[in-house]
Amino acid sequence: MAERVAANGAVFLDAPISGGDVGARNATLSIMVGGDKSAFNRVEPLLKLMGRTIVHTGASGTGQLTKLTNQILVSITNLAVCEAMTFATSNGLDTARTLAAVGGGAGASWQLQNLGPRMLAGDFVPGFMIDLMVKDMRLVEQAERETGLKLPATELVHKLFRDLLAMGHARSGTQALFAAVKTASGAQ
Image 1 (cartoon, helix red, strand yellow):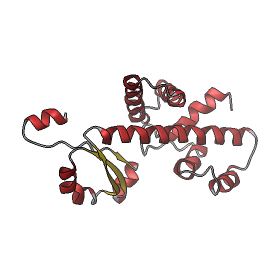
Image 2 (spheres, rainbow, N blue to C red):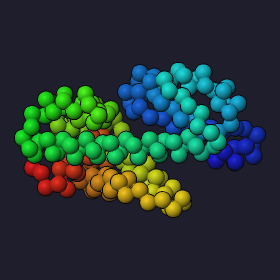
Image 3 (cartoon, rainbow, N blue to C red):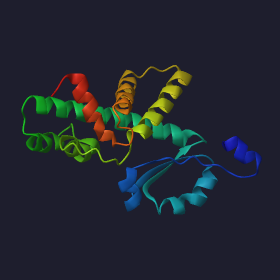
């Protein structure tokens, strides 16, 4: 796209975001921008109106690759929270106390703090939807093939998200991954 735009005398920046609907409403998004540095410098003041963390990631396309890196981290951390909460509930732990205990230690994460309680409550209202995560995971797997990588945890979480599509959760929030993990684990 950048080449086609340049052929018409303009400059293209890829600028995917992270932070979901809450980040958009609160102007606290993380924005990963790939493309011409001087063009980035010109639009950075506008981006600061939407986000708190704005990073020029390099050449055109690196913004998108950085976003995919983010999606790997988000989806696998989400999977870890789902498995941990499945383990906790299956062993009869008081989940509020468990969340408090592990949320202050090395296992703490945004997903644990924000999505853990929603998972346990069965609240799958979207911040970021399953169908969008499946699209992003498909792009990650495409990039894997192009570079010859094999990322087994990413492939597993992508399969689980695809399972959620089949279960009718396309427009559910990514915390609905909890339902797929519970099903796969045999938990009640």
